[in-house]
Image 1 (tube, rainbow, N blue to C red):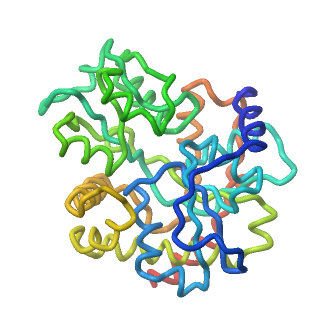
Image 2 (cartoon, one colour):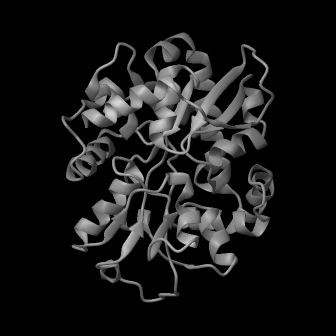
Image 3 (cartoon, one colour):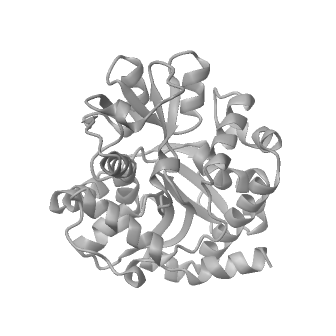
Length: 331
């Protein structure tokens, strides 16, 4: 745990990220710099809010960068390279346990379960979790929610799989294609693209098996939240409206709007990805995190042996603005 916190702080001093910008890099009062843990259809409402002009309505512009892992995303927030981190709340928990003078707080939750799908090398229409016994699985890095959630599923299923943990999160699919491991967890649209290219087969949904857990959230330093409350509210309102639109409309129509945000991915693949996430009820409508969900997250982290001590819900999570926005939009 101490090594994890130290690595976050050291990485913050050397944060380097790949940029995927909705807008230009010019500095202005409207700009919010968001570092996302990875780029996936799993986060569709964030991109859809841009496509539908909801950010413009809130008088904000988004500059989006890819951290390639929650540790890098949190490092970007701590170093000031990003205003807001979009990643698993475990990163904020680790920092809170280590202690800081400007605590990063969770102010909005977007996804409520694991968004990865287990991909195997052969079709397994009758797949059982026991099929993973003794198999080598690429499932993320230790300490990250993707890995811990998968480990949680294996433990509850009493399965002893061998986890391959020496591969960078963003390189897992490439490593699997190169012959590493018997199975690999992939987010969408990577999973559907992989299957469409005839390279493998989706055999299970990790999120469907693990149940609800606060998976991906918006996180910012106390100082930023206190100074830019209008931007925080605008972001939450835009994304909440986009989630409502996504759930109310056919995936084929939504895919037309989202495909430009995924270079090299077909509209059909984006639609398939959206349908996959709709089928597992991936997104929240009220972005205010629930305390029961936060408690379950800490149960998962504790079970993985990665939690030195628990953090009180009220010390790390802000819910007032997100819930206010939800009541306004769904009134």
